[in-house]
Every structure is written in structure tokens, then in C-alpha cells.
Amino acid sequence: MGKLIGYARVSTKQQATDRQEADLLAAGVRRDDLYVDHGVSGARVSRPEFDRALNAIQDGDTLVVATLDRLGRSTQNMLSFAEGLRSRSVGLRVLNLGGGDVDTSTPMGAMVFTVMSALAQMELDIKRERITDSVAKRRTAGGDLGGRPKTVSDRQIRNALHLIEEGASTAQVLRDLGLTRSTFYRRAQEASRASS
Image 1: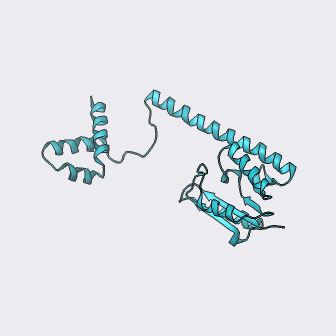
Image 2 (image 1 turned 180 degrees about the vertical axis):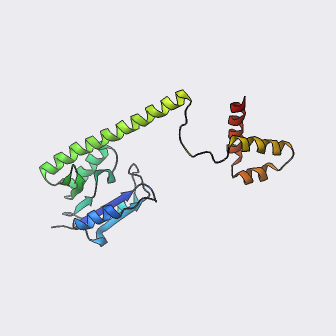
Image 3 (image 1 turned 135 degrees about the vertical axis):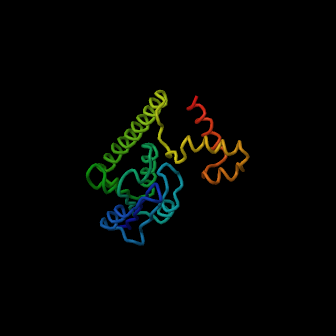
């Protein structure tokens, strides 16, 4: 029997992989055979630790991930990835897929993996559609589109414009506000439209 090679990933540096790592270690992956990417999107083709994990895998080994979305985003990519592993005589085990542990080296595991990959893709597509629809509705209604909150008020922008008109250094005023030149002038246009 080959080795278990574990892979864990989080999309942002602020997220932790503790739970994924604990699940992988509990499944029998040795700490030396555990590869972890921090702050790397699943949509990226190249992921440093994922690439190292794939290079470490040999015939008869099994790649183990905690959840399906750690592998990637699209059904097509996940299925072709699983097929690529199969052609190398490498197994794929997803610990928390459909409420249980799925091993693609078995016919039932391969079928469950295929169905769950399609469902994961559908869920992502629906979420993307909802976000696009929500943004379009808010934009049409003139609502807030989210983003970083304004820390500088329109009143402060108008006061800054007044100071600049009176001869104050533009660079110094922008430093005091903590704004870039382009952001300041964009906000100045927004403030003048709001006051008219």
C-alpha cells in the first residue's frame, strides 16, 4: 500500500487550515506528507504546495483532501484531475464529501465524486449568478455596492477643496486625508454632484 499525501488550502492569509490539517492527520496522513497553501485561490492553476504534493506522489499513493473545494472550482477541471491521478495509479480520497469519506479508486467513490463535483460547480454558478443579479439591482436602484467604507466624509472633501483653493499644498492636504490624488478628485466630483 502506498503513502497518503495530504493537501490543505485556504484562500486568504487570515484563514486557518487547522481543521483541515487535523482531519487529514486523523485520516492517517503523516505530518511530513502534508502540504498546505495559505492565501491561494482554488481557481489558480498553479499552487506552490499543491504542485509539491503532486510531485511527491508516486504510483500507489493516495492524495487526501478534507473537502472537494480544496482541489478546484470547475467540474471539468476536477474530473480531468481525478482522471489524471487514476492514469498514474494514484488514488484520490475526499474526507468530507456528501457526509462521508470518498475514495475515487472504487467505482462507487468515482461515481459519488463525479456527482458531487457537478453539484459543487452548480452551487458556485448559482452563487455567482445571485451576486451579479444583486449588484445589478443595487446599481439600478442607486444603492450602495459595498466595498471599503468611506472613512473620509463628503464634508471633509469639500473642506479640503476649499483649503487647496486658498493656497494650501495639495500634496499635504491629501497626505492629511490619507487619500491618493485620483481617489480625492473622484470623491470631489461625487461630493459636488451630491450637493447640487
